[in-house]
Length: 303
Image 1 (cartoon, one colour):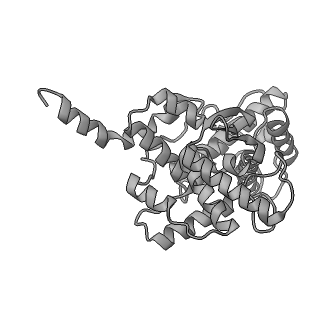
Image 2 (cartoon, rainbow, N blue to C red; image 1 turned 90 degrees about the horizontal axis):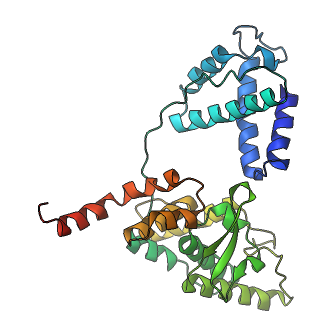
Image 3 (tube, rainbow, N blue to C red; image 1 turned 30 degrees about the vertical axis):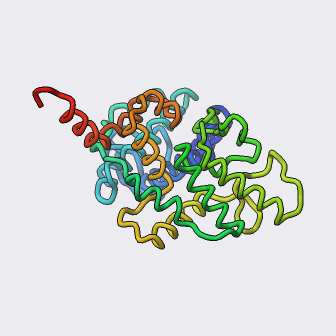
């Protein structure tokens, strides 16, 4: 089974264009499934023996789902089942097995969670919370402003190059999930902070900055990682004493919520976020229900 997992991951990367992070997540989920199978005595499986994909049936997969329920949330279980289902679909296409044993396993129903976001006042406090004129301070201000201004994913921000920012037109080029490219508008304040950071970086290094260079660098001159961006946000939130913890993805939620609260069309927000499905974007309408009721109470003649 391990060899098939490797082939599957290679296919995700080479043929479907999945990102490194997505491929890593699929690999981890399948490796955990394989580890469980090696320790199982279910059906034709024998503990400690090599796992033959032909010996994995729906009963085995349901047993694994039951095992996961002990320590995992429904959303995590659903994701792991999706990875298993995709893997066996790949095996069917390659002729390794005849049917997909995961097709008859029901996906656990997930509760609708309200995305975490910041109110406008707290968001403005956060954007103004980084002080100083050093290269790192200017970089951090530019990062926070760009995340809120564009609503891009943190991985999309980390992957941006200098040439992806069009200061004249006010757009940034974004490479999203599945290597899909889109243009995202970016506000004047964010552009101004990006410009201040890039200009100071140029003065500090004394060398010409190429369009192909990463937009945001770490202290060693390499591309800033998503984890580093999350860490710097944690530090700023802690320093400001914000009562509501927020992650880089939470700033994406904040962007969408504030746009919808201000009257933006749902399909426009879908395009800005790079969502393939409108259903994904509709989560944010639940966050704005308070605003909806406020408008209703003011406007309806028989409220």
